[in-house]
Length: 226
Image (cartoon, rainbow, N blue to C red; front, side):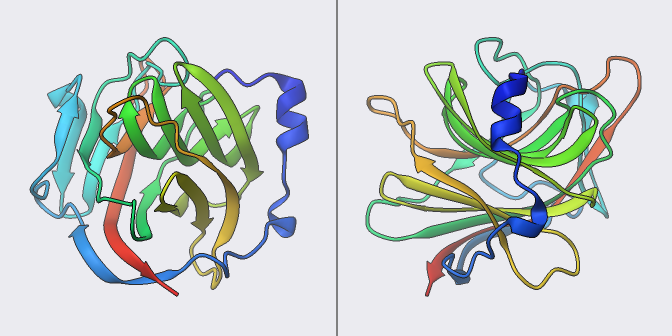
């Protein structure tokens, strides 16, 4: 993720100033859950699968964070995991997942993504930006990227969340032991013509030689209720 320094500074938001997501609905009408214990649940598929770089264990889904990128034109990250998204035209949908990684490389990241194609998506994830572990939300349309927020965090484990309805998407996160969600940002969906929405999990910009294995657990899709 090649952020320009001036943009980064303008978008840097201290966690202490992040707003609790009281406006985001708590979801209790679950449509799909997968804790990735021992196997992938039904409905998942891979883009550019590298079978030796992912595994499912008793601890969840583990994906090696390899080199490659999905931010802008390269679109060459491997092990992009996809599943169909619910219809958000008439109801609000919440997607959430736990991710854990200890990045060492600039822009090394693990993301929850609302995905139409490699060039059209919105992401929120844990990422290393200029030596600071951060939550980063960004929007991409026709490979044109826009960083919505960069929020420093202290935890290598975080729960990510999107709430989507109509053509709007809101991102949030919660670190372990935190009682409240914190807001990352909101934007319109970058839907291409005849685009079919999917939900994606993506890990990329990792080191070439060292093995960094991100862990992903407690994936959930639900109808949001106020």
